[in-house]
Length: 275
Image (cartoon, rainbow, N blue to C red; front, side, top):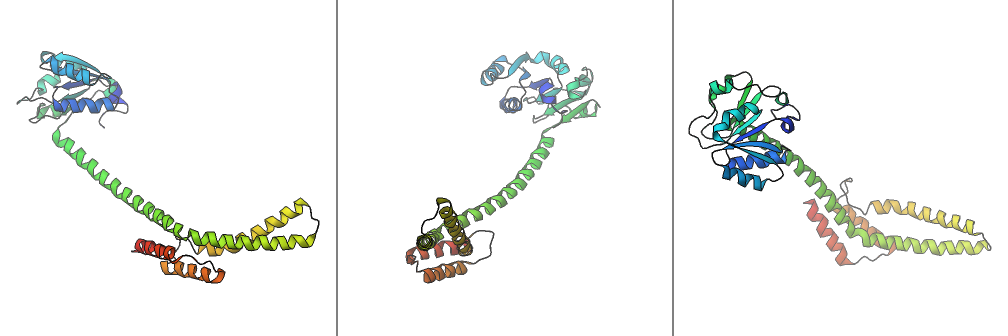
């Protein structure tokens, strides 16, 4: 966030300390594409363990007595040691050479130690930025608020999609009625078509096909309205009772005889959705 665009990949990164916090820090930096870091630590063994754990990154060990020398070569410095007193003082930081162009000449200290490893007065230097645990806490809180906002948006999407899914699922309960109605219509169409064609006598295959397509088109248009009134979805305002009424009406008009068990199952599911 604090480096220029693409700065993390080009910046010289120094991590002071090789404990648990430094391990988490290196893991995060590597995941962000930082593949070369200098690690200053009292003992080399801890750094060797980190090198084994992150073989995809180049972790360069330097002893503690090289701290200021390494800091002078770094643009981004993370500190995480158990020191009870600051390890970077204002006078020492003033003596360091300027940060590289990758950091726009601004050296950035991110102090995640408690107590602080970077003296408070270091922030008075114009070419230096210092961030500590309190600053990080503000970032964490801001991220939490953003996640909460996104979670609310996600919940609204989930609820909307759930309504659509449940409406689609419950509309499947009307499929037996729709199938029976279509079968009835097709039976009537085929019968009447056969009667019509028999009266024509000898008729070409082309004309037979045209008449067949005409009959299908008429049936489909006639069925469109009833079919729409048998479906439940989030785009119409029909109530459960209206849909059930339509099912009863179609049963009576076309003698479809939908099983009572299927009808009750449909009524129960859609009423539950409405609640």
